[in-house]
Amino acid sequence: MEEEIRAELESSGFSVGGATPADAAQILSTLLTYCINYKMSPADLVSNWEFNYLEDRIRKPASLFSASGFCGEPADATLASEVTFANSTCFFSSVEHSRGQRVRLDLKDLDHFSLFPGQVVGIDGHNPSGHCFIASKLIDSIPNSVEAQLPSAKKQAVGNERPPNSNTDTPSRVLSSIIAAGPYTTTDNLLFEPLQELLSYACRKQPQLVILMGPFIDSDHPDIKKGTVDQSFRDIFYFEILRKVQDFTQYLANTVRVILIPSVRDAHHDFVFPQPAFDLNLPEDSTHQITSLANPSLFSSNQIHFGCCTVDILKQLSGEEISRKPPGGKPGDRIGRLATHLVKQHSYYPLYPPAAGVPLDFSLAKEALEISSMPDILLLPSDLAPFAKVLSLGEGSEDEKQFICVNPGRLAKGIGGGTFVELYYNEHIDRTNATIVRI
Image 1 (cartoon, rainbow, N blue to C red):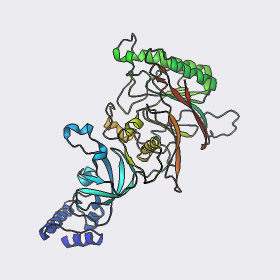
Image 2 (image 1 turned 180 degrees about the vertical axis):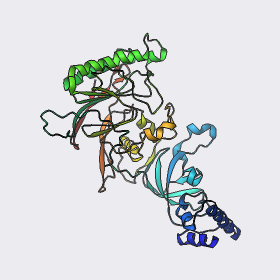
Image 3 (image 1 turned 45 degrees about the vertical axis):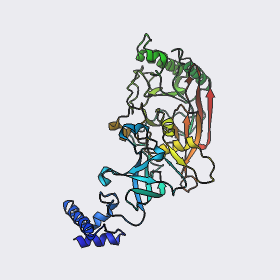
């Protein structure tokens, strides 16, 4: 059977070799034992070989394609958190297929790339020495069906308001919205004046949907840190946030929906990421207008799909990413590139290991962090400059897809006001208007 294994390997382009003929015999003997123990035929062995634990000794002379993750290789175990990713790039495959082994990655032959720790990529290249993989092609987008329906477990319809004068039975893809992210009060008090100003603006504009993202009771606020407040954090949230929102919805009656999404900085809520929704305990007449969703969330309104994550993944990725632009190429949109990484990786938080201060629960991450279908609008509040951008996947190809990414900024910055976004979606991205509003 050893000769059958050798013939199958050679017919598929593999070679069996070593320093001496004894090395080749040892490899074949090990493969034979592997086939017997796992009841595999030589053909089954070869078909799974790219991820086999012996691939460091039996290499296909042609290019390899491997699905792997990136990580920074620490120069010293005590300095793992300080290592420079750009100076030591390695990739590894799964424990199941390659025993979790790492190999240094040489990027010299790539004219452009954008990489960060934890990214799942496809690599085409070769490993002539067994110690360094020379990449010739990199694929950083996991295939995704944009038309896939949202899973029922994740899909949350938060209102299908029709525009005035609409006579159709099916809600049209038209939606006016206001999008804001905390903090909602300045650092010199807990009066929540920026929130009140935002709601006054919304009363005048009368949007169909208001999305408020945390932090609401910011654990970084000086008074919260010092513990000088005379109310519980939950009471502050109820009296200063929730009551104001209730008054706002009562003023506009049934024409508006409000969504509240927590942040890991919310002092009154479970801070472990992913986070559950707030337990609002609202009166029955308010529950259809005010909703809390988990962090992160995937939801829809008027058949427009939203994705939202309140962890500042953009800022964290910006500190970890390494990239190279094509020779002579124009400077690219770096923030847009960082945002597209989330959709390409099908994850609201693709960075690994997580940034310092992010209490990520890996037992919940697999399901909760998945972006199962590309949203129409991706909400990523960040300390970076506010923006609303139209971004593309597969740009220039026949299957190019677009989505809108929004960072509304922070409603309060220091002792002054900040920004929020007013967005009007009209059937299609090309007819959508977004405005960054300062208070």
